[in-house]
Amino acid sequence: MTTYEMQQEIIRLKKEKNICILVHAYQTHDIWEVADFIGDSFGLTQQAAKSDAETVIMCGVQFMAETVKMLSPQKRVLLAHDGAGCPMAEQMDRDMILRYREKNPGYKVVAYINTTAELKTVCDVAVTSSSAVKIIRALPYDKILFIPDCNLGDWVRKQVPEKQIELLNGGCPTHARITAAEAQAAKAAHPDALLLVHPECRPEVTALADYAGSTTGIMSYAEKSDAKEFIIGTESSIVQHLQFSCPGKKFYPLSKECVCHNMRLTTLGDVYDCVCGTSGREIEMDAETIAQARRCIDEMLAYGG
Image (cartoon, helix red, strand yellow):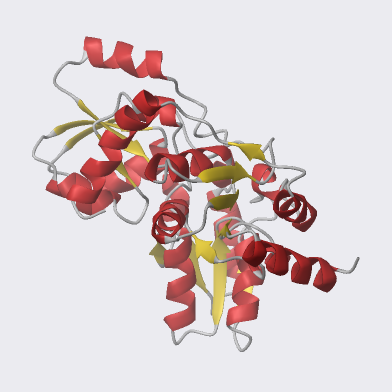
């Protein structure tokens, strides 16, 4: 079966079986082409909730599939590849945060959406990379523990200096691998290019950027900009996707090391097996966990997230 033939069969089967396919932006382009929705994790979750599909396939990582289940508990939710986790989401657990809260009773816990459902059960409000500054600025309390990404937290803290934001040592290993030396070398090699980075990058990398924002924010910026060359400081798949959407512009990866190996686990064949019903892990979550974990997401939505 060729790539095209497999894609056509996936499209046929998803329509026949009333399946919605969610594809995170870091997936490969052959998977993009069979998606119902493409984007960042929480945006995909919201699209799934609006869909009338009975089954949802998440081509991403586990915490994303969990969030889909939390907002659409009546739907059958499948993670396309059973082994696709997220090291950042798994760095901290419920007991760790409960201990922090016990020792620091004046602090509220703000959780990046890139956290497990279990961890969200002990957090006060969730945020995305695109909404974090807006929501934290609007919160009615000043003492905040931001988890788990200390690089994103540092980026937020610099923009919301009126809040007392504490951080723990966690983050995205993929973005943390990018160094300032690599950023400086890329700028020297491509002096006419704008540097666009994700705020999960180290502070010294973000400081060199012309724009810092979410993955979809980076793509939107590049697509709308009058500039013709860009250095992309996030998962390297975004370079290829932008080459498709903006064929008249040049895109360069900031680092060849910026590869999310968990995202790359999912293949078009995995998606095919999912729609055939022979693969994919169903996400199961009890009603109590869903109710407890949803509270911080509902708070995020209340503040405009």
